[in-house]
Each structure stands twice: as structure tokens, then as C-alpha cells.
Length: 250
Image (cartoon, rainbow, N blue to C red; front, side, top):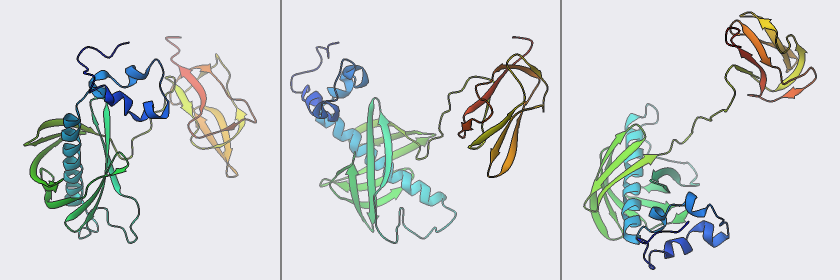
């Protein structure tokens, strides 16, 4: 795979400066994971996106404080003993930008992707507007939120960002019809086998946890398509105990 004719030699420096390249973590899939549009972006392009990500993070914390229902008088991210910075991560195309920030009255301590950044002076921060002096230039940034999408406009231009959730909901890849262990424990009884017809509410597997027995019952009528556990097995939370299928379609 080639990087394309639109990548000038100067912009190819983006490949040489990439963290994966510097650490030696390169292979034939490098350009698939890091498209040329990302690697060949000019430094000016990157700085605009970074500045807009900083504004988006500060607007986001202002919105969170405005919506807070407890400790409303405390500044954003306040700690009795200062520790790490608050962080917000945005995606801009294939590029991830982690903005770390700590508010100290009007001065904002910043980090970009884990590296210390120049401090900024904050004149005003609201959910839809940030007035910020950074790197010697004061600008006003207009910020609009729509779900996880954040749109930032400033004299530098416009940027669309996607804000990553702080606590993403884990995705569990399981086969349809799977009944999962509600807690870690030991399988003490298996009450059905593959091919058995079962009725709604019928106990299928019994788990012992904390000296108590917990029955996993069929949620609907069906047929047992798989029973991957046996009596005596230790199971973890979320582990598949059995798989049911509709009798009419099996």
C-alpha cells in the first residue's frame, strides 16, 4: 500500500514521528490503521484540531458543572489533594486527541495526548462558548453539542469532533439466545441437555455462590441448542451457561 501522491515529502514526516513508528510497532497493516489523510495532515491542520479539542473539553466541563445537582459551588475537577488531570478524549476522523485539564482559578493546566501543553488563560467557559487565551492568542470558540458529536467554530475554522464516553458500556459478544452467569460461582446442577424442549421458567442451571444457590431459568419456551458447562465447573460473571433456540425454527 502506498501513501499517495498528495503526501509531500515534508508531510511524510508525520509517519516518522508517529508513536507506533518510533516504537517499532509497524507492520503491513500500519497504513490501514493510520490512513494517509491522518499521517499527511499538516502541522497547522493538527494545531487547529487540537485547539478546538481544548475548547470542546472546557465547554464540556462547563456544561457538566451547570447540570450538576450536588457540590455545585466547587470548580470542575476539584480535588482535596491534586492528582492527575481531568481528561476528555475526542476522535477527529481517524485521529484521537486526549485533552487533560485542571482549572486553577483562571489558569488552565493542559496536556495533549499525555504530554504537557502550554498553560492557557480562561476568560469565560460556557457550554456553548469558550473565551480562551492560548499560546499568546485570545480567541472565542463557539461550541455546539449533539449527543456525542461536538462542533467547534472559531477564527481558525470549523472542526467536527466525536467525544468518547468516559465510562463506555462494555459490549458483550454472545450468541443469540445465550443465558449468562449472573455472578461468579460453581455449577452444581445442570438440569437440561442439548436438544431438550424446555418451558418458560424451567430451571436449566444452578450456580452456587457465597453459599447460596442461584437458578438460571428459561425466559421462554424453546429448545436447548448448547450447554457448554458441566457440573463442577467454575464460571465467571457473563459466561455463557446455555443457549436456547426457538423450537419452531430449529
